[in-house]
Length: 391
Image (tube, rainbow, N blue to C red; front, side, top):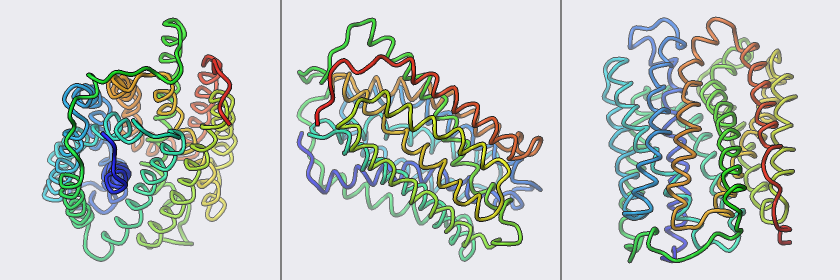
């Protein structure tokens, strides 16, 4: 099935929807906490951990259904399911109701990565550039969560921060249903081979190391995207305290950092994966160490720095799957990798509030520098590219 430009744009937009919806709660948690009877946001945030656990665990059945039943069918369910679950979040009246609604949201959000990205790249001539653009749009969704939620909370209340995106997502689902062509056969029935063949031993080593690197990278992603708003709020006291202005600053951080994925995506098409991946991950360590005690505008620039390296590292796992895995089983392989990495890294969301409450953001950032060092060590264990990259 060849994708029309309109359908490709909707698939990219789906990535923005996926990340945006998962972070609305984390962005608005300070405003939601008093309404649900909590004195501190740190005590309410762990209730969202179920969403991120489902985001990981749900990737296995989502990937399997994507390969065996059809990726278009699954993406239709994704758009309508995300819309419905976000509306349910807006209607909640207690912390446990919100937790249940977020679990449902996480289950639907699990569809996108193992299904939407393989659907987008299945006929792409330059998969690295395609993945990079897709990553840019996805991370702009994180930026949109920051700025839209900030303004909604200030002017219309936190419930509208869920309702407005839900209605937008519903429109996207209707357009996708109308414009996308039905698949004539499931991806699992297609004939084809991986772009680069590896021996079974090298392939097993690749998947093992890639999964460990993805786990540590996902821990950093969850710690930062769920904690950046509160970190900025704490370190900007006396400078900027308005939630709409803080949301705009955080959106700026994410928007600038998102450009890294476009650059990295193009580099992936021309250079060996392993040294490029290692250099980007290595830069995370000094960025976190410097940010540990930074205040005000210095923190702002350091947040841009470490988010550039975190977002810049994201395309590598998808690029490796495209390069080394046949299209007929990419959704299942991607689903398994996501289930392990995001299933484990959902602990970051659960631990974030209690850790910050007990030890503060400075110590958390030191721990994150250590996690980045582990990621760099895992990347060094990747097998070297077996062929010279095309230029």
